[in-house]
Image (cartoon, rainbow, N blue to C red; front, side, top):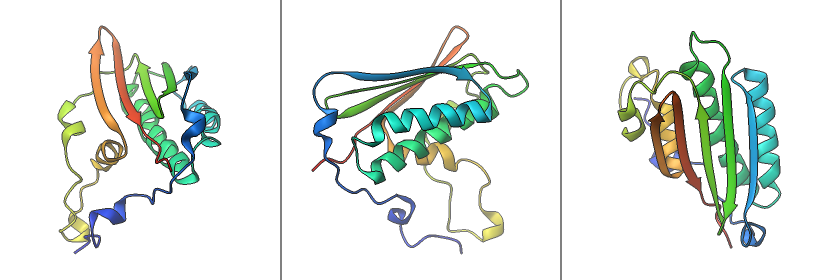
Length: 166
């Protein structure tokens, strides 16, 4: 069997952070970029750098992992066969929370139920492990209020992230 010892093994360690810098007025990061791997990397670095110094390293890593998973899904799936269309990324913090919004004009998400699924089964032989389905389960476990909707020709994905504060 390939099962981890427990679900906690799948979660990164969350060290407390001093979130005083995340309290108070709104602070937003906005970036519009093409759905290309290097552009995603640059936007990801800039977004994480904007907030990383105000949260602990574990929380900054969790933010980076979450954004990387979502943005790479947009490149690989939303724009599959369409070319590199635009992605709009917005992160705003208020009240100790990061509010994230990602927009694209790619294909609609084909399986909305994928966002509601649990982690794929791990109590199976290694050769029988699911190839997909891990990313959304991971994103869902690391965020709050994960929501998707289609508005006209746009995909909108929103979620919140709350750094662990002392």
